[in-house]
Image 1 (tube, each protein chain N blue to C red):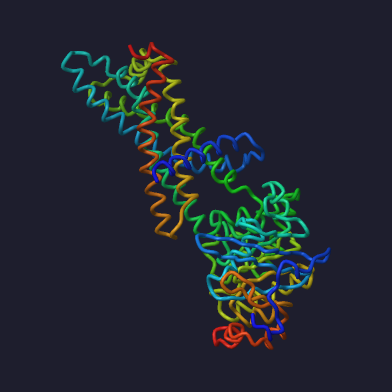
Image 2: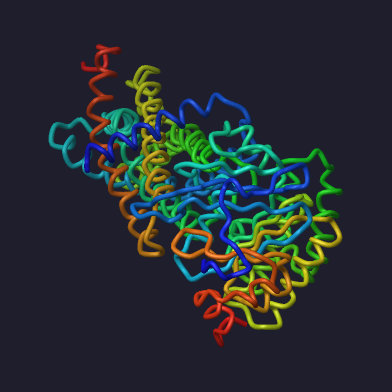
Length: 263
Length: 251
């Protein structure tokens, strides 16, 4: 981050905290042979959208996986709703995970059960709803993403965009206060990508869901991000609003914003 | 490398045993796996048992005919099937079907992030995928082995019927004339260990799959090879153990 840039690299000391902070990372480091995350700190106010940008291999997906406890950081804290998920017992972590929706890059639908059963899966596991209520709720969520007619189809029979939308329906079915999306528009045509963005925005605005989205797509970033954060070589290179990013003189940020493939 | 792998596999097995006694017990998933791994293996076991019975009967006849002891064919065949051939053949066949299936399924789930998706959905993936399959295998193996034994005897009867015209009743009367509960129970219960070996080995290889689809294929193949070897080696130990506990079986 250059000194002249209005957007800033955050440090643990600068991180905003308080009851309105949905998510906060403090000095998170992680190595897989080489350092993937190197003192990453940021916070996300409740009901806002944070878009994480950066080149491939800069630790964006690892950041998301750290938030939901799929990757345990070597050091640092990950506060979800004020609770540090690092070092939590499995039972406690699972309680926190029930409040987080996760859209995987390739949707990660369970391919041995139907699309509708995929969406119903979290309801069956974590609620005491009747079979009828589960079916109704799952169908409603599928309808929300335009897949109501696909309830009984198997995931393998869906297109990439449909799988992504079904994955989103599953991630949203418990109406989680925090929704993480790993490259939601990757591999999709522009129209389908727009649809996914629209669904994420709708969830954010209607349910005051906090969004954390990893993307390479600047068009998506502009739509979804109240704030943007750029990771580079495992560190926060820049953070700020879209306007602050567009005024940023950092060559890396400029290169990313002006790339013809950036959307 | 080998020691490290063996250690990890052992820890994987211990964790499965420990978690089997901890809630939630996932009865629905265990039943689904019993159907997938157990019931769906029944045709393979029944047909194979029939064929093994026919072949064993033909070989036994060829041997005993020379001594004029054809009447011993049903009892000899039943003894061989119940004590060793049935359990071992069933376990090896199932290590092929079930081992490859679990290795490929869990491997594919790993590389397509479905296991991570389970964890992200606040589900203990190990318990949901590994413990349920292990319990299903441990329950299914003795049942399928019993099926193997009976279909083997039936195959033996068909061969005998063709060769000597023996009646069904006489054949089965002679079959059970030398077998008692100590022949059947220990040999059949040892297949619970085989079921455990198949499930744990293939689940471990599937769970730790990397390198995409190539890794899935490798996990599937290694699951069959490794579980087959472990079954054969553990069988030696188990037979020694059975002879130690039931010395009368050595006669």
